[in-house]
Image (cartoon, rainbow, N blue to C red):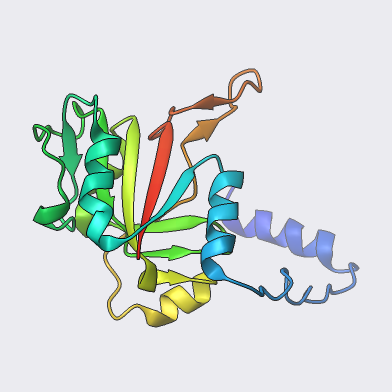
Length: 186
């Protein structure tokens, strides 16, 4: 069947339906501390969040990386924050380390730029994301308005990868990391 007869049938079915009104704002205004809300949402999403002073970031990263055989590091991670583990390609690394473009408190999400290396975001089973506190915004709109330049792709990661496609059984790590840890650098 071609497109025109289908659209004609849809228009015919909808012609007597009253127009619907725009529902307005879907969320209540967000009040309070963005950092506190961010950590609450991260936990609700099944991720972990920690506030770390910048001067202690390297030691915290080393402690979290302990026991891993290697790491895949995103291009945006400063050399001084890279753990002393062997560098591995993302498909072989048990740990991925990335620098977030920004964080969103209302959803507990970190935005990861394609320029950082998407394979590092998705292939290692554990993903450690660094987020500079000044890059944490209360809403997604505020974050986008603050961006000076958009990358070709931007992924919003709001927790570990989860799926219940087969038999409605929840499985973590199917389409990406099964564990997401966010260090907010203060």
